[in-house]
Image (cartoon, rainbow, N blue to C red; front, side, top):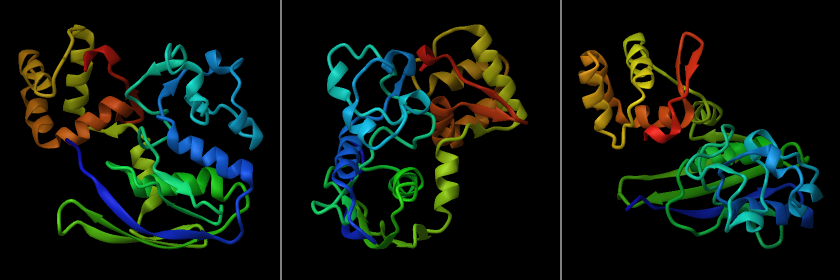
Length: 244
């Protein structure tokens, strides 16, 4: 299951990455981006990260020494949720062998690839003093799913709105008030919702039929909200993680 997109081309840097920066970005790509407890990580060696001067970051977002707890996973808060600042579980952009560019690592099922490229630019490329440019073509499994990512001077020109895409990917999902009221009722009821259609039944059961009608055609947005929280007029609710 899942969907694979292939990428052809390389984004070029104005100068080569330092060896320590190349190593860190490779480790970043190899590591499942999981929500972690920074307090647990404080005493854990993370040489690739410390070599480039990065902190642990929010929810351990810059941590890359996954081999340390690959068996016990004592620092992992949620295996299936990334740190709140990151758009997904896997970043599949890596440095080229000579450190002079950024390319796809060839692995299947790369999601949020524009958002991840924007993240890499914002958090690593630009702060480290590099300038990225170039064009990379993509081809999805569907014949019509084809396009190009065009970068100039650390700005993603195409597709348009990359910064907004990243902002959306890491922000709570805005919902109408009647959906917000339903979510609060579900949370207050404290009954597990173990499948995607179960929430619709629960909404009806609790007297929130209008919310059920909204959720069904907006299932992707609803599932995004389970990862990032739901927002209404500046208030945010995070559903209990055991409920999905």
